[in-house]
Length: 334
Image (cartoon, rainbow, N blue to C red):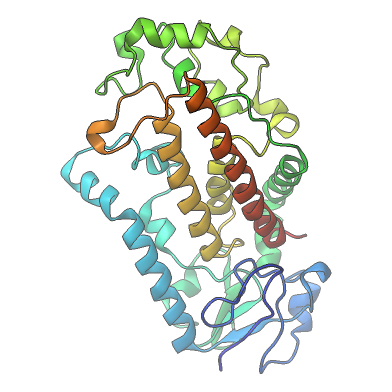
């Protein structure tokens, strides 16, 4: 039988009735599973502590739809990889985050869902899954035993980040700071020209107050650029410095989603991937590189018009990123 759920706040049901973040999960055609509840399978603030049974035809349809979505999103990268070519924009998420297209392609429904007639299928042997009669479900209790520190850290980071106002004064200059006074060998994308040349790029960095708040972006600043930053964001202080106006903080939502797979439903992970992919394009359009040959029109953040456009984009990043943070927090509810 096919399960249906109450949509999460502000969202419509997906095909098959599964809310993207499993914020509410009610039983259809199944009695409440008290053993799952006792194991913490659904926390009280997720709604009724019950499970949803998905018929084989239904969950395989959802699985196939996810696979087709990911195949379309990763086709270019997979082709280039097979041909030994690289793309400075579209390949970044796979190179930097090291999460393969194959792993992204695997469909996970999230907690509280029993996939009927799956016990004899390969997914029954996947990490963090257990059989439930003839079905298969996430072993949430076992997952949390192993991953509780990560779950707690990510939940804390997301909630703190969302609680802060967006800071809109960095103008995307982190990419410029990564090539400040760098030698040819030190430039990350040396195969692509700098729009303003080497001296012009250095001048932009030196004529601005750098305001990067992202630890992983800051650590790639050149030695000459790092002291020019207003603060010194570090991994150790990440909980105190990350803010929703940061493109890389929003891109990292994809990282947190896949790191907590299969607790996080695959639809949400794919949504985070799509936002990260879009923001990587914005990131590189605002960078010092000239990528017009690849079809990317520069966003000249060194000009007043470019700064205004970047700030407008950051406001949108904060809004959309916080919407995904809310969905991730619902999926990570203790």
